[in-house]
Image 1 (tube, one colour):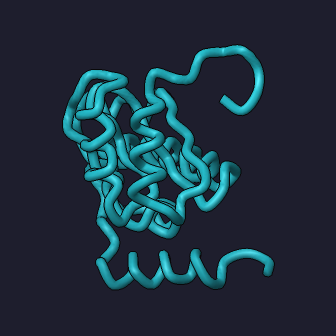
Image 2 (cartoon, rainbow, N blue to C red):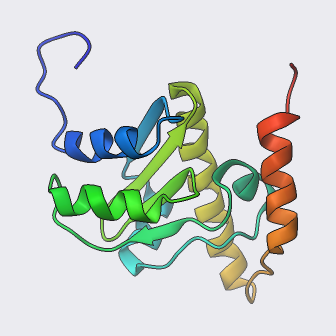
Length: 150
């Protein structure tokens, strides 16, 4: 808690574990958004089938194995699912999104939610085609080093 009198989140151990494991991360957003929560409840990863998603997240959004909220187990499982990624689903719970700052973490969370919705619709239309690992790597590199105004 930076200011005010509210108690820290029950998920503080998870946030601290991520910051410790990922020194490049300077912002975390944890949410229970509708579409991401649907994929989390189904324990299904969000596939790397949309350019914006893979640019920002680095590939599919994995699902962390289930653990009770606020526990060390959830923190460890979130860190495991986040390896090499900027977002993960928490089984039967929600989403955790990372960024190089808080604004980027919020953007990551929004992109995951948008992808969760779009790919649910794609599933209704017969499915999606995942991007190749080479294309994912190229788009992630572009996002990190060339995207936007500098």
